[in-house]
Amino acid sequence: MRQLLKIALATLTLGLFATSAQGMEIRDWHKGMDMNCASCHEGAPKGYPEDDACQVCHDVDDLAEQTARPEEDKWQNPHNNLHYGKDIPCVECHSEHGTKEPMCAQCHTFKYPAHKQ
Ligand code: HEC
Ligand code: HEC
Ligand code: HEC
Ligand code: HEC
Image (cartoon, rainbow, N blue to C red; front, side):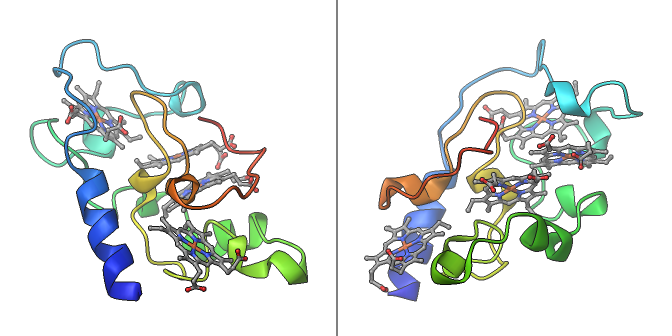
């Protein structure tokens, strides 16, 4: 099961976006701080950032606490969930230059009302 999901995950990351480097907008919540392309992209900004680029500023343990579910739905926590624990690249569920649904929606109908797509 775990293995299958990993494969599904790997295919997901590929080819969802086909944009150029021109006019790449960043999200409102990242504006106004000292953020530039290199805050997430190493070298020339193209392709996806490294998996751990976001963790320079965001702590996964803190996130898992912030999005904790009631006990019976505990493992629906996007930042600490049944299949992957805390170990999924942020960009599977968060987009920077576009919009994205949490990847769980491929197979589940869990509600994540606080998710800013
Ligand atoms: C240079 C530091 C920095 C980096 C790198 C960074 N962020 Fe942020 N991010 C922040 C700060 C500061 C905020 C605003 C405070 C907060 O909500 O945590 C924020 C806010 C957010 C929010 C909105 C939170 C909300 O509900 O208002 C999301 C989602 C987010 N970041 C995801 C990401 C993802 C995904 C990445 C990697 C692609 C990333 N961030 C990289 C600093 C950073
Ligand atoms: C499996 C999907 C998924 C992954 C992977 C994921 N997130 Fe999230 N994230 C969500 C969802 C869904 C929410 C909305 C939470 C809710 O509904 O309680 C959220 C909320 C957030 C928030 C706002 C937290 C708040 O105050 O409510 C930030 C910041 C954030 N994510 C950053 C990240 C970063 C950084 C990573 C990588 C370390 C990451 N996320 C990985 C799905 C994900
Ligand atoms: C907060 C983190 C963050 C910052 C800052 C950021 N990017 Fe990105 N970038 C991403 C993420 C995440 C992706 C993956 C696609 C997506 O989610 O939008 C990406 C993808 C890209 C891509 C590839 C798109 C594709 O089709 O494969 C390009 C090109 C890009 N960024 C350019 C830039 C440029 C230019 C800047 C500076 C103006 C910048 N990025 C700033 C996080 C960031
Ligand atoms: C490729 C399809 C797929 C994806 C993507 C997926 N799941 Fe699942 N999930 C399943 C299947 C199949 C089951 C039932 C079998 C099992 O328990 O292993 C399941 C069971 C669960 C359960 C226990 C049963 C339930 O409905 O409460 C939870 C919790 C869960 N998944 C959370 C998540 C979360 C959170 C995500 C996103 C990070 C996610 N899943 C992504 C296929 C998926």
